[in-house]
Length: 106
Image: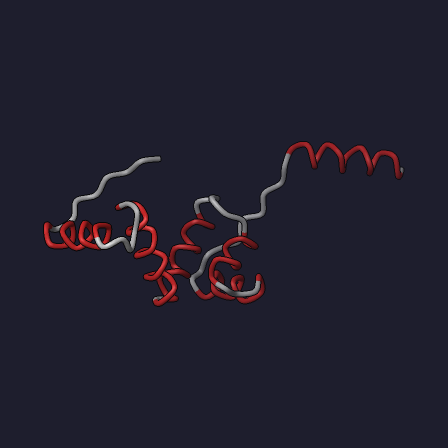
């Protein structure tokens, strides 16, 4: 999903200089490295991003915890502290399977 952003001219020049010096092969590589570094150094931003992705259903609770470097239990505590209710998704196929199993057990 290509996206474009506006950057100040000086930053554009710095990016071009890094590519010209051979540190990166493309603008995309510079931006990816910059964002990776930002999220590694500012854990509060990594947590905020993971919480938002979880809230929007883009990642599971396990993946969100992994992204933050937390255990699932620790991430659940973050959700509780922020007043966010956990999302429990159930697939319709799983419901049908469990209904069949319950009927067989009767």
